[in-house]
Image (cartoon, rainbow over all chains, first blue to last red; front, side, top):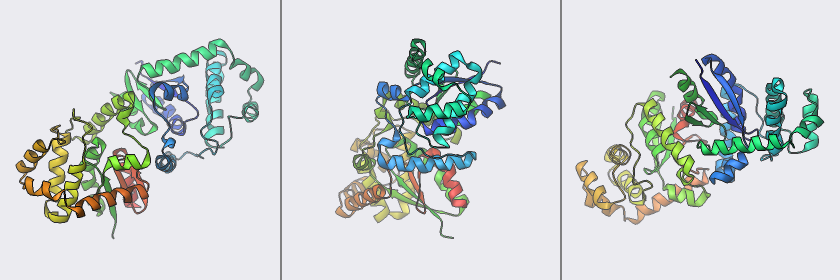
Length: 197
Length: 197
């Protein structure tokens, strides 16, 4: 068996946080590999003409309720960030940098950033806050932030974002099982079914 | 018990068709009343600044697949209309007219229009096609189309559309259980839970 779920994600998306709380166990139960694909959601929006639901005020209000409903269903903590939307360029380059240079700490990086953003509701757009969060999680913040300026890291984030758009991604989270696209944390049951099929 | 689901709908929305195939049994199982609220989705979009998902090409392509996945899950027939999007003003005024003047035929009207639109994929924006569909379903098409010009009918559709926007509706289908809004045919399980609560 070589089943996998390719998970195109951006830390800035609250629905992506919810998907991340569920996907590892869904993949484990199906014996599937979870392949993390850091992308820049802002770049996806720019390329596709899509926008955050929050750009329509009543849709944004519904979304806040809706996310809380799913957080209760999943029994996971969630706090909507008062700093939303945050520019996630450094965070996503950080994800790529950790994948490339500190792969054994990638899961720790995901946990650290998702929790700081969507449980502790910190302003990760502020480099001082981000540095503190990383240090407290045992990362060498200065070294990691320096790695986000590497050309290879920048290029890889850009390439994955372009690849996502090429494959039909227009938002986050987006999951692929084979070539089948599933958009949204509210489609995880279809991901589960696709892994069984 | 006086539980109810208020269902703000427009025939032009494929997700609304899917919701309509499920809601009567969900309400019956919960002993809840299903209150039909015909609204004009175009008016809702105009008032809120929202737009059809189809306005973003890759989102539209995903939506087509996603609707088929849900149709399979619900085991209901569905064919995406090649005439989409259809101007539904006459169809929605027709729904109001039937509610006001032929209430005993309201369920038949819903079935006729939803099936012609989303199962038979007919061009109901064409009055000749609509007239034929209505006649075949046993309606006096000429009389019904005349009723769609009544001031009371026009005013009521407009009022319900404005009421929907006031309550936070930004798309279709939108369901209320009490004052809780549930948007989308993919939120029917939350509607079911709210009826139990």
